Amino acid sequence: MTQPTVPLEEDRLVGAVEHDFSHDPFPVRGLDHVRFLVGNARQAAHFYATAFGMTPVAYRGPETGCKDYAEHVLRSGKAVFVITGEVRAGTPVGKSVAEHGDGVVDLALEVPDVDAAVRHARSKFARILAEPHEVSDEYGTVRIAALATYGETRHTLIDRSRYHGPFLPGFVAAEQVYAGPPAHHPTRYFQAVDHCVGNVELGRMDEWVGFYNRVMGFTNLKEFIGDDIATEYSALMSKVVASGDHRVKFPLNEPAVAKRRSQIDEYLEFYGGPGVQHIALATGDIVASVRAMREMGVEFLPTPDAYYDTLGSWVGDTRVPLETLRELGILADRDEDGYLLQIFTRPVQDRPTVFFELIERHGSLGFGKGNFKALFEAIEREQARRGNL
Image (cartoon, rainbow, N blue to C red):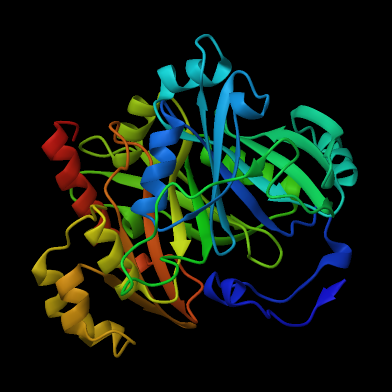
């Protein structure tokens, strides 16, 4: 089926493009949800509701018959987070949190045909974690399967075309955990997930790029190597794979040999292996989002004032005045298609692992290549503060 237009605001914000799905061996409709495993799901859900402005939409736990876990589902536009924690000791969730800390375990994908996707994946030697099966309740039926990817990360495959409940069977509609931000805040701090970045071990990046090419039919968008993505002290390499219409984008990083440990080395040490490093959230108004999130306690990486002294000479005019970018520490980059604005949080848990990016796109389909040096120097300053550089 040919998709002639990109009608939704969320699709425009993430840089989606036209795509003919009729020849796609593994069509993907979008990122269904991101699942986090955490030590305290109730408190984590409160954090994302207050600091990130997300709306609780569904819940399951002991009160609903789920004896081992509590799971909170939050939404902002098309972005959906599932926060899972154990309520009794000895579960796989608790073991994962003990080993890795709070982190992302599942980048779930909505697909039109779970069985066809699994057949194709199996023919390409993917590891199937869960065979296609159905789960149902009074709201309908969902067909689900799961594939393994790097580390302990998985891709749950979901066809929810026959389901109309609050999230998935077994979940009930959630009560608000937070009354809402002050009236002057934006309605939504972000509208969609733009991309999810994975960190893998030295020498494994091309293996996993090949996995997405072979198994899911993803194409390569960008490649950053050598001086593209290095500072005086550390370096890494990165390649970006994307679904046919670019609604789903997965940059993959690996460390490179340098004088000191890179941010990827630090992540791999503290997470205990490969996993999801950061999630980029698409916003239509990065200034309002940053102001609101800062007011609610989110910490962003600082940018040296000198960065802005020459920014206008190569980025040109943007929607946001240079003075405001400087005030808030927002980065800007321009390529042949347009420009983007972006900013990165500090890690949002005790371990220096998962963090977030806010990104506002204006035509650009890139990832802020012009900001890599400034960003990685900022991360190195944080590593030095932690004694990990």
